[in-house]
Length: 411
Image (spheres, helix red, strand yellow):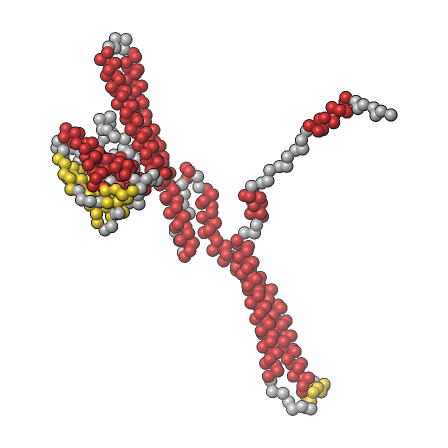
């Protein structure tokens, strides 16, 4: 007999059940999320240290009680006894001397045990209280450091632990934490200044472009000469923006990526193209150039090191005075290859020289459109030199000017 055909409703329901896949299991929690509840439920350091100290005191007290019990029993047994067979009358009772000695020893041990059982919980309780208080005082500065760390934000990096009266390891921890906050605050302040200065420097050529275009478009009688003048201004503004962006990219790439190529380089050879690039401008300004080069072999990226020499010489010419002088020296000493560029110029206070290596910092000359450059020259020099494992510093020249020295490991 033929089986009846299933109804359309049953077939649709069966097909729907077959088409719907089972729900996937929920993804596992990250390790940090799985460990977080156990961290929150964990016992704090203060109770654990108190428990350890109390347990140590209890163990020592129990050991002393046991030793006292043994010592009293030994002393009782060491008391000279009466001859065997001797009896002693205690009250109305006559007992053998042997039993009397045993009774005295048992009574002494019982007294010691009774006193110990009374004193033991009192000593343990006192140890717990004293341990809790002392551990709390020891961990108090750590709580202050933790509270300071929790209050920190980017806007409140000037917060400090305030543990000047601490001593020992806690004082070292607080001082190290405050020193770390000082470095973080200095880094964030430098970052803010960098962003603000970069925005300002980029806004200047863009403002020039917009102004020139607006002025030219608003003049219906602008002729070809006016258009050429506008084109020249636009070209100079775009060149300035391009130089600034190129300098920012080079600075960021040097600080993050490091050196792309390392091979033998002589710093004396790098001064030749650097001086050739500025000789025309130096001649127009009447600068006297003195060159004293000796072999200064080192290892590094030749392109970046050539940029170091070029930036130093360009800065020396650009921030010089009319009819001034420029001196370039290379050589070796104390295991280092040295490049030194000195020049005349305006006087710079000694406490302001280190600021010249920060991005967009210049000398006392006002930052105007007549002063070329982006203020990144010495910043790029320092970044490249540090990437090569060297150091760069500057010193004011008596009477006005600056002397910049670069030291790299000698080859």
